[in-house]
Image 1 (cartoon, rainbow, N blue to C red):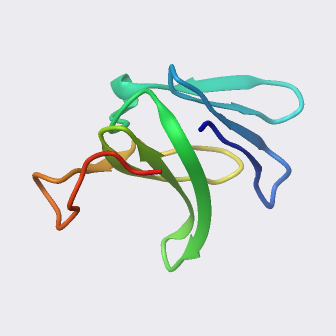
Image 2: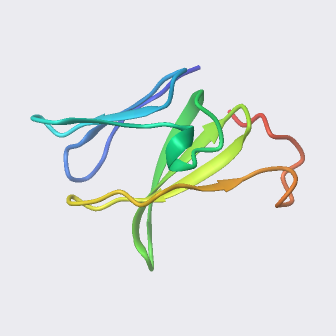
Length: 93
């Protein structure tokens, strides 16, 4: 189960089995475990507006990652896994 979403800025986000990709109409960007994603396989994408600004939550086969997103930048992901949270499983759909 892989995901495709469009955020409020019109950026298209693609969850794949090799990481997260985005396309803003001109430029492609890709994020992998090197950017601290919990896993390369992205099962689901959810956007949330928080007090920190817009964030993207990524459900993976090895936990959940959250990244801050703005039109100009994406922060490194923070991984949440069974070992460092209350998750009962690392596989998240």
